Amino acid sequence: MKRDLLTLLDLSKEEVASLLKRAAELKAGVNTSSCPLAGKSIGLLFDKTSTRTRLSFQTGIYQLCAQPIYINRKELQLGRGESIEDTAKVLSRYLHGIVIRTYAHSSIENLARNSTIPIINGLTDLHHPCQALADMLTIQENKGKLEGVRLAYIGDGNNVVNSLIEAAMLTGIDLVIACPQGYEPDSKIFKKALSQGAKVEIVTDPEEAAKDADALYSDVWVSMGQEKEVERKKKKFRNYQINRNLLSMAKPDAIVMHCLPAHRGEEITDEVIDSSQSVVFDQAENRLHTQKALLEMLI
Ligand code: CP
Ligand code: NVA
Image 1: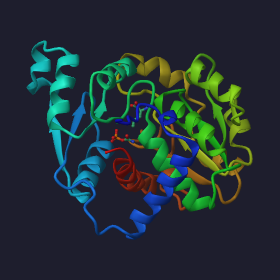
Image 2: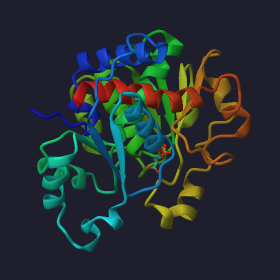
Image 3: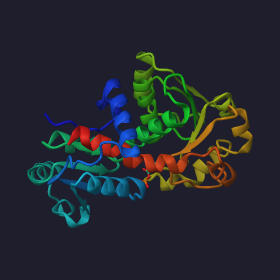
């Protein structure tokens, strides 16, 4: 039976742990000589811009000896009105998996229902599971564990933090989210996490969240697709910046995380993102290793 990764909860706790272990092996160059995906083709369908997700998947697929095929929706008959259902059935006859980045999460659920090949979520408005996997590897590398590590996310309750909540459910990480009222993460995801005993908390005060944190995490205030909200959100989020003052509230050895791209001077200062505590480029690199481990598991 095919397996998708639409949200992080498509993986079990045990699978996340073994995926992170395998990603660390791949990063260290252990057991990497084989070509597990030789002869296979993976489609990459991106409706939003991307630097890290697109390039790390393209490179990783090549390194596993498969062929990445970048698909421009406008050049498909999809752009002329062919249905997603028919497209999914046809692509399933050629490809061995699809990585998709799009807007509505329901679109990738529809694609997955109509495909017989694995569908991997490369970001929707609601989730960014591949990012959370790389983030977990980065925290594990720096803190030696995930269980009980206090991660403070400062900013918008968006796709990135929704997936971090699911990561907390699967790894035992202790997640505190500081956001303005009205900008909380998805309430269904949050309630599910609470009902399953995950250590996830939402506060409005960034200093309260940052206090004694092992890691501070931020993302842009305005996500792709929200361009009309720029001015309103910039005002709302003015105090939700990771800067020297906020970092001083965290533990002295706290790491600073950001999924990138960053809007320097808005959600994070140059001084902090370029400091020795910042691991943002390790996070970006870890996209490659965790996604290779994911491809090995699903394809
Ligand atoms: N973090 C992330 O997904 O980056 P891209 O938008 O560049 O893919
Ligand atoms: N929340 C951001 C993440 C980008 C990687 C967005 O959706 O634009």
